[in-house]
Length: 348
Image 1: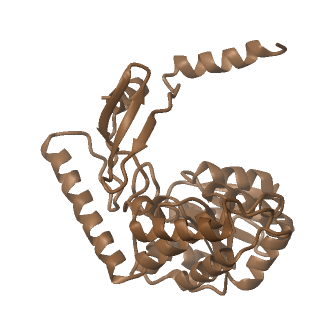
Image 2: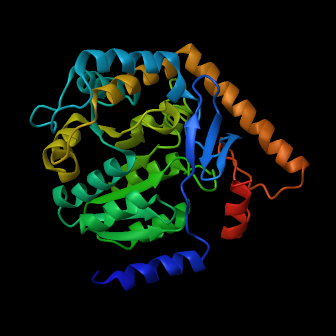
């Protein structure tokens, strides 16, 4: 086969760096979260899944799975097309309304994943805003980085959570050029939180739009689970909020919420939205049920309990003298410092 050697060399490099990954074949047990059975060539083993981003177990919640059963019995499996053709159902419409209301915005738009929502939206902003400059936190997710690259807009990278460095970059650019500041609320590797209010202050001062990735925060923070911006009372100051229907909501998909005009422009322009089959109705139904539950008192209790368990685990790690990286969120990072040792520990 032509060029096979180049692929072999790429894999060899990954192996040499200790980054080669082998997928674990898991059978999750509904009702016993986070227990699962791991299946290997030599047999099976019962395990506890420590790395799942189904933070609240909503992927196994009865109200979610019942809504999904109802949707698949009523609508069938797939959506049947792109949103522009035949791929819009009652569940898509209701879910977008729910998401807009959750974030206090006038519009929302569904995507097939959180990665796609970041990539499609950020790449499209460069088409809509001529001469745009995007300011990006250095620890932004790969999907944000890819979207910024594909936007073909000029971009500046500011040091992680460094508001003064961001200010210096803003001051150095033409005040008349359109600007977008792209950052996250909860950073998934270190578990720290972006300075949302301070960045919004800068955005106001320099007439910039704010783009906030709340992927690891939606469902987890705020009175209704709308994220850190809701918790901190600054949601109204964020122009575009991006989130996921995986992770805390336990299903799959991504979305943005913003002013209805911005949403309509992205809907009408973003190729990552236009030219793909829409989210399955069954997924939309499950996500809708999950969001509604997490907006309720029951959701508030789940968040309180989860934070309590995360705090307990952090203290146990401290007491054991393990290299815990301190964080104010539910993320519990242990610094191993070596990819091969980290992989060996995860397989234990």
